[in-house]
Image 1 (cartoon, helix red, strand yellow):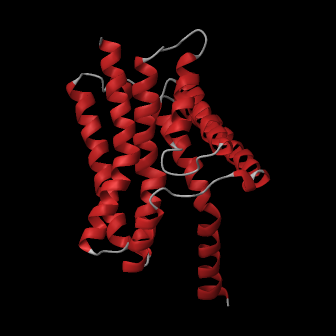
Image 2 (cartoon, one colour; image 1 turned 135 degrees about the vertical axis):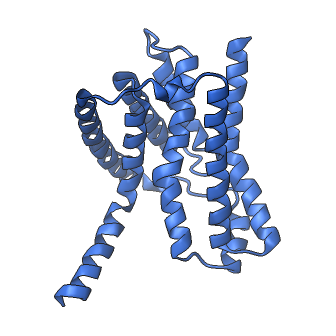
Length: 241
């Protein structure tokens, strides 16, 4: 019964972290007649509220050991460096795989009609860009790793001889990313392999902080090139031209 309860909590967490914020926030923003900036503000507040509520619940259930028991030693820096290097190459492989099979990837967003209405109410500005970056690189990885690695892998088949904790965490992570968009086999493979990588890092290091940093770094690499172009152009036109 205890495992069944954990399964129910896990499913609820996935639903609340993936589907509900998008649906609820879009309808609220549409009702208020706001644009993308308003949507970004509401979404950021809701996801942060969910993260803090989950952390509070873990504390109440005396399960915050998932993070608190992880001390940071000098050896941890070595593990982090190796994991980040592996993350970089993982990102390159994913990008190459996506480029190779881009024609098979379905990017259709299930709430596209609602999103189009929000865009018509107000185009994104610097504010929505910053909030999107914060969600993708900071808040999102923390929440996802707490749910999929910290909570799931500590409650279902922990340290399984056959790596069931790693495999199941990876598959569920892949499936959760198909709820709103990318409903195709290629995307499922990409996200599942990503989840498999993070799960291996967590099992290998036994440190959720390292796993979160790897996930954040992986997502950050999406912005790395645009950021570099912006910084380069700013320095060139401001100081060197």
